Structures are given as structure tokens and as C-alpha cells.
Image 1 (cartoon, one colour):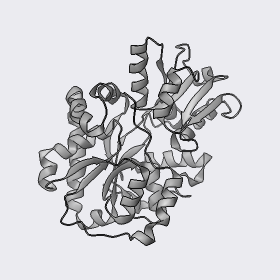
Image 2 (cartoon, one colour):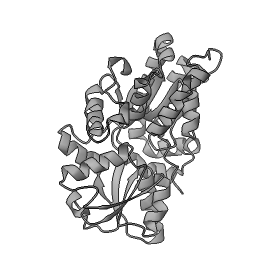
Image 3 (cartoon, one colour):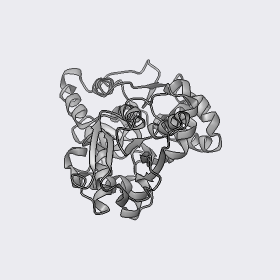
Length: 330
């Protein structure tokens, strides 16, 4: 029951991929091919699996299919060639692509907080309680790491002095190390956080979900526990040439969110084969990913607050500037 590796592209991935754009060409015609909605191998993609299966979307885009992108190399090449016309990604990676000229637009935000602090000691009830603890994280200097560092700073802790951070490549690597006693605390995405809890229960080990990064973020921003983390990106070509189809995708995503809220067990069973995750993990994880489909234009204020907070620590995280209005579709 190992969670998938973290596949949201890093800035290094983005920059390396953009260097290949001139060689591969930004445009390509796929009129004869069914549309593919490319998803990430994580819980929020359960929404996309349901959307693609819906009758309304199959009528609007006959033969549309869901497929996981399995590596950042695959996604970079797909964006560069024009094959990736509709794909799930982090908002900050999409903004980085847009700011560097890749033509990527953000259609919506679908998940609003997937990051949690897990601990073996239930006495940890506040950020202040993390002082002096060893903390296992993944993806150093990317958005989840920056979010955690911001939360520490807002609580008056110095991330480089008051805690001991140890980094691994992905949440999938962090889970077994944490369960083996590598650190006091782990900062994990869903579904890795739920996977850790399920494995700990089976192994008779005490593990607790002690802090919700979105809750802590919302207290600071005053905007509630909402971090616009992942959504659907769309190519400029698809948006410009088939706006009706793009609108149908958005409507199907909204319907899927409503259906999942009413049928979580069925949603987990439906998504499990497509995501390569046990239905048990998806079902445990769904309540903790804050599914809410919001058009990107409507979410712009939340996205810009998020980007500005990230840019306090690293302006390069979104390509050096806030994306302009053209980035926001939907």
C-alpha cells in the first residue's frame, strides 16, 4: 500500500522542459484523436475519473479518457508537443509554465489543502510544540516545504534553528521511514498521510494527524482553510478553439465533486483502478483533500494570496512574478 511518488513538477523540471519547447514545437494537431484528461496519481484525481466517466462529458467529447501522467519528463514533453491539452497539476507549476511562455492556462482549482503534520506523540497540538523536534519532509524548496516553513515562521519558530528538518525525495519515501522511527514528525500530502495512518494501525504503532497546514494557513491569511493547490490546466490552443468543450469539462468536474461528496465509497471504488491506489486508501483520504471545484478566474484572489506567500521565501517559485489575467480561464 505504498503511496505514489510525488509527481508535481518542480521548478527545475519546468525550466528544463521549457528549454525543449523550440525543438519540439508548441503546436500540433490532434483533431482526430480523442481528448485525454491527464491526472496525477493522487486522491484529487478521483474527481477527474468521475468527470470523464460522466455521460455529459462523453457526449461533449466522445471518447474522452482519463490517464495518469507518470513522470515529470512525460508531462514536460506532453506540454511541449501539444499532446497535454488538459492536465492536472499544481497551480504554482502551471503559473511557472505560463510565465515562461508555454501557453498553459489554469481552468480551475479542485483541491484546497492536502498537507498534514503527522506525529507519534498526541501531545503535539500546536506549531509551538514542534520546537526541538526532528521533522521529515519531501521535495525541498518546493511549495509544500515553503508552506511548512511559512507556518513555522508565523508561529515564531526559525525553520533552520528551532526544528531539525530532514528531506527525502517524495512522500512515498517518507512514509516507511517515518513509521520506522526516522523522525518525530512527518509532513505528508494526501494520500500519503492516510496511508501512514492505515499502515500504523495495522502495525500497532501510534500515529496521529496532529496539524492541518491549511487550517494554520487560513488563520494567518484570514481567508479560511483554503490553499489553492491543484487544479486542471488547459492549453491555450484547446481553450481558444474549443471553448464549448472546455466549458463541458468544467461542468463535469463540478458534477463529479457533488457526486463524490454524496457517494465517497463508490467514488473510491471507481477511482482505484485508474489511480493505481487501493480503494481503502482513497476512501480514507477523500475527507482530507477539500474537493471544491472553483473556476480559476473566481479563485484568482486566493491563488494570488498563495503565490505572494510562497514568493516571500522564493520569488522563483512561480517564475518571478504573478501571472497576468490571461492565465485564469474558466
